Length: 182
Image (cartoon, rainbow, N blue to C red; front, side, top):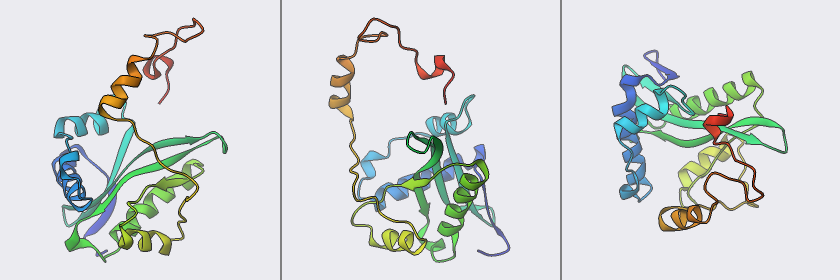
């Protein structure tokens, strides 16, 4: 990283550039049709009244050269929060300059400063450059776990099986925003 470069929290005016990089990442991941987020959605998630998603950018002379989008996780085993890194992306023309490492180092600093227990993320099995990069930082794959996902009809079907607004034993369930969590 040069003298005109910095890692900083994203600002509202960065949203269009971040969204463009999200779409580049989706292309790289061979799933461009999956990147359906809008500027309005991203702005609301990052800068709304109660943001639960955060973003740091690699600023190269006023250009967003990369980003790390993350949120808090919680380990019941450690009894502490952690950071889950949803996306880490650096534009091809800015790779090899230390931006990816600097973004991860900033998240590691936040973890250490706030007493968080871990920094974790997923990587596509075929993304050897990323895997080698992460291993070079000392990250280890968590091979004993498999990520599962519900989307679309499967998600709607399971949601339809829930007891609307109540616990199966009759007690009311509070929604996270009502319970004061997040």
